[in-house]
Length: 119
Image 1 (cartoon, rainbow, N blue to C red):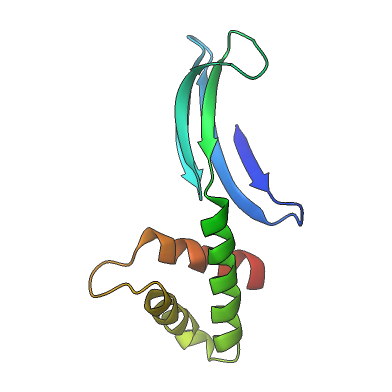
Image 2 (cartoon, rainbow, N blue to C red; image 1 turned 180 degrees about the vertical axis):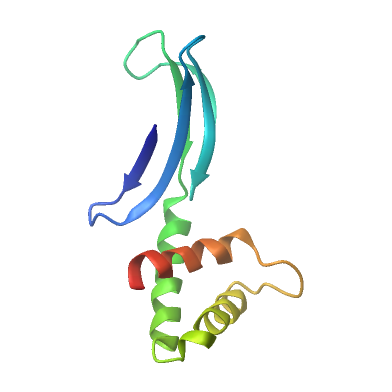
């Protein structure tokens, strides 16, 4: 099952892919997008005996990421397609003050917002 989480403007905030093994009813988080998902025991929302998954979203960071994505897109929207990604990622990393080394997951999350919302 895929749980897609959107805000009031239908912008994707996050998602989680969950698999339930029908043989034993065990839930497994297979993948996440912009969130942290934790297998969290039994249902304490509806009072059933089903297993539940706790989903945590840092909404403030997501909103900040959306602002950065919009600013970066506007900065480079007229750049040649071959250079667009490199220019955007360099600007994102500069804004996040990422030094030399691997690109942070947050930079890739901001890039994915650009892809989803602007391209």
